[in-house]
Length: 163
Image (cartoon, rainbow, N blue to C red; front, side, top):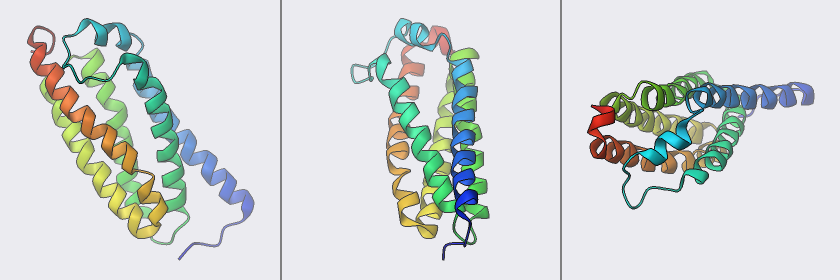
């Protein structure tokens, strides 16, 4: 059941959730300033996405996350789902620091696994609140599935960098 919110509150809510999502993106981006050059310097699996794809993909995914959170926020009983959403968003922002700045291969990989689980939990909780909110997180879960495999592979292929 959707809460009754004024149009102004709806718009401010949408803006707020998008700002929160893109704030997480900005925190991760600070750690990723030199990520393209660093990433290209690493040995990568043949199936690794091209470097240019990461920016547009993450920009799209953060937008979808913000919209999904807003859709869930409009529903009664959304607080637990939104709490999990915020936790996964924080871990998402932290991952760039773990990988690109601190070069912690094992911890980066574990973080992607935990992030994947948190995204799945968020997706299911959002789905129960508002189906479209859950659906909007499917591309994010798919991309982080790839990120899990890529983090593992890059870590294993570059022990001199990631220990």
